[in-house]
Amino acid sequence: YATGYLLAAVCYFFVFPRYGWRPMFFIGGLPALLALFVRYRVQESEVWQRTRHKDWSSLGRGIVSHWKLFLYITLLMAGMNFVSHGTQDMYPTFLQRDWGFSPQKRAALTAFSMVGAIIGGVSFGYLSDKIGRRRSIVLALVLAILIIPVWAFSPSLTGLVIGAFAMQFMVQGAWGVIPAHITELSPDSVRGFMPGFAYQCGVLIASSVAYLEALFATQMSYAQSMAIVAVTVFSTAAVIAWAGREQHGVEFGRVVDANFERAQRLAPSG
Image 1 (spheres, rainbow, N blue to C red):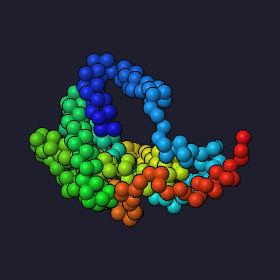
Image 2: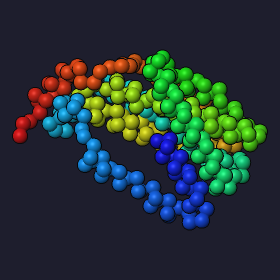
Image 3: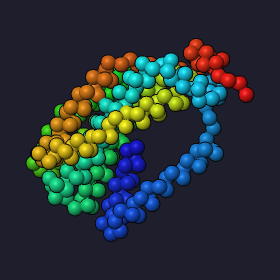
Image 4: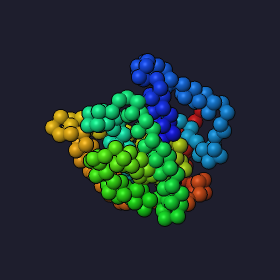
């Protein structure tokens, strides 16, 4: 995600000032062609082959049988998407309105912040193998709260640059743990569906964040608006992450889900 964001910022730096938005949309669609390679060249996992559902009804029953877990992961993903999109979507607008940055300056600072995101994701992902998934997520979010004054209210360009790098280091640091965390939480029978579906439900819930920040900015500066949203969503996401459980180190495919077996027996044959 962070690497793609970095590449998009670089593309914006070179393309947008001269050609506008239309070429950006065409360029943005090119990576989708990788789906063809994945479809025909990447093999399915052995666990999925062994636990694949016969039809959609058995998959639905598998989700329903784990509805509490599905609800928790959805809430966690909503919180985490508020965290990422709340610090990223309106950030270029903040640079334009509060700092008067040109498109190229906005792109350059965004790209630099994504370097921090890449390093943060790798660092906290590694750390989570040592101290646990939840501790790593909460640590990154708490440190992100401490960075808000520099990130949003720095009086100097140097502070602004440091704040942008450090903020995305922490934000994507927390996100760097998420794929492993929610995959480990999901039972074998729905591991191919539940994490992604819960993620998209979380995106749907968090889709209002840019609107809320823009709405708040009609009554205050973008710096104040983004800071208020950031401290709120960081705190909320940290509480949600800590309130859940984790299954760090679980071995996939070792435990056969009784609910999955029942759903498979109830599925119509043929």
